[in-house]
Image 1 (cartoon, helix red, strand yellow):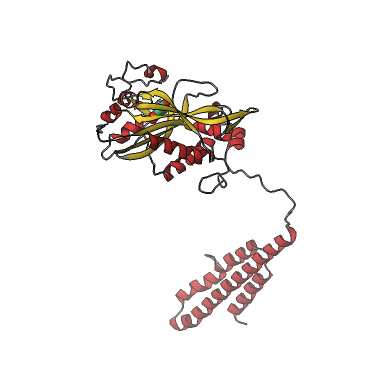
Image 2: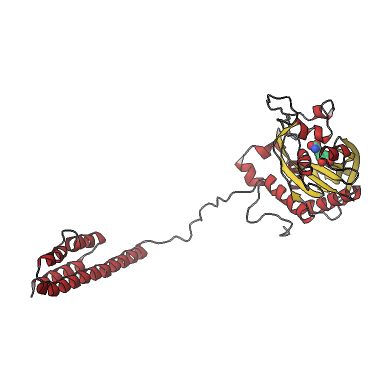
Amino acid sequence: MSEVKKIEKNILKLISSSKSLDELEKIRVDALGKKGIVSNLLKSIGSMNEKERKVKASLFNSLKDKIIQNIEKKKNLIYENIINEKISTEWLDLTRPTRPDNRGKIHPISQVTEEIIEIFSDLGFSIAEGPQIESDWYNFDALNIPPEHPARQEFDTFYVKNNSDIIAEPNVLRTHTSPVQIRHMEKKNGVPCRIIVPGKVFRSDYDQTHTPMFNQLEGLAIDTDINMSHLKWTLEEFCRAFFDIDNVSLRFRSSHFPFTEPSAEVDIRCSWVDGLLKLGQGDNWLEILGSGMVHPNVLNACNVDPEKYQGFAFGMGIDRLAMLKYGIPDLRSFFESDFRWLDHYGFDPLNKPSIHNGL
Ligand code: DAH
């Protein structure tokens, strides 16, 4: 038997009797590694004469190929054995409880904001936004609340330190979402419009129904032919859809806001039975929002001609609506980041109520 045949027989025998991947790897290195026996044979080709080289080169290369193929085959066999071994020794206990479901919950404010947006989108309103740090001008003056107006004191405003006396400089945390009315109307092509403005607002107040930060939703519809009946219809439609009651009954109670004339606070008919609030029935009324026809001074402040355009506006507390709809008793709990509370009052992201899925 030739020397090469002997080497081949020997290596193939080693491969076939090897038991592990490590062992196999060692055989490969001994044969084909840098200083491996077959590598050395291949290197020796360089010093051969042409005739000898022709014969030996093909001999050595086919030896190399054979070894590689055999190692591959054996490797697959070992893998298979490892898997078979696992299958026969490992087992699955189907009676064990599943892993805990750690899916997060959607916060009631996010949920309610989305519900409100869905309803007003269906009514043709789009969303507008504005900054949370505002100037006196946008938060008060442009909304017909001049510095001497008593309404300024009612707002419990947070002031931001500012080195200038200019009223257009940002210096308050906005006390309501109404300044976004101004920011929208003063834009080029700002009117006609139908917008809603969900957002955070700030007032220095804290008890069961007040927190220093809360969420409001502003509404504004401006056109050449808008009157109070459009406001009434819009709010009734909204309440019908939001509270999911067919016989919604609203009361428009004459009120005063500097930015609307006439102004109305809107109450919803309700009953309290055994401490349980039911909307749409009974002899009680619950205030849910403020509204009115936009004051001509507000339109003027935005360079909108009040002779040509008019419209309605309204403002409601998103948190308050969430409390009413989902029976949440304390406003402060919304902002305490208590997981147990969120787990109880939050919504399953894959199964949440929506006017479009009828839940
Ligand atoms: N901005 C008022 C507030 O925060 C709410 C409000 C009342 C907004 C009447 C309006 C409106 O747009 O017309 O108390």
